[in-house]
Image (cartoon, rainbow, N blue to C red; front, side, top):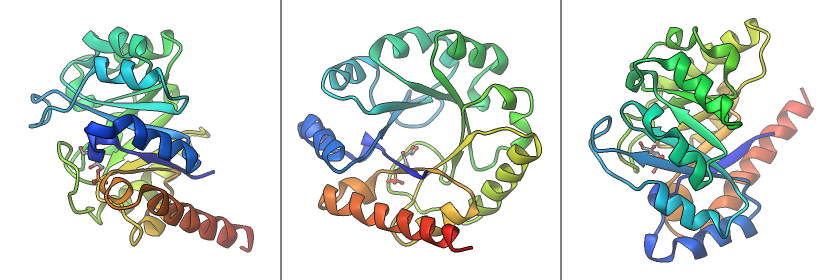
Length: 225
Ligand SMILES: O=C(CO)[C@H](O)[C@H](O)COP(=O)(O)O
């Protein structure tokens, strides 16, 4: 099952609640929530108060991507605000094992995100405990960047690594994904697709439907193999 995870980084914050409602009406299940601290990445987005506020009116799975230094300090506050999945970066954690264990002990799903230059071996110490791995296909910090095609091989290698370990872990990809390149990303092995500008710029329902059509085309291909 392939899931679209629209990133609210590209939303119009003046009408954020209405836009989330449109996503729900369009059949979306995940909401990707990009938290940036101006330190781990050179940009600041928003934090727990905004998440608490949208949580009140949404049943979507809140997929919270923490692009922050030492996220272990803030896990409780993101749990309280309504996160369902918390993603952290090994590049930002002095103790990744403890950080992942803390997320799991809170009863949340845990994920690790790798920057484009970070090797897959950074996952080795925690892979068996993860629900999801997020491959960044741009350098994190800003929406609207160009997809890095070298990410495709990284996704294939990750899929092989997960399958060799006999695990079932979601593979999410984030950055520069649009209607033209998403099929390549899925064929490489991703099953959770983050998209910001391609979902929120223009008509949201139409943009989501176009993604869903491509996901269905992929499913048909697989069924006929
Ligand atoms: O995490 C991000 C950047 O750090 C954004 O989620 C990501 O870039 C998605 O936005 P877009 O689809 O516009 O590239």
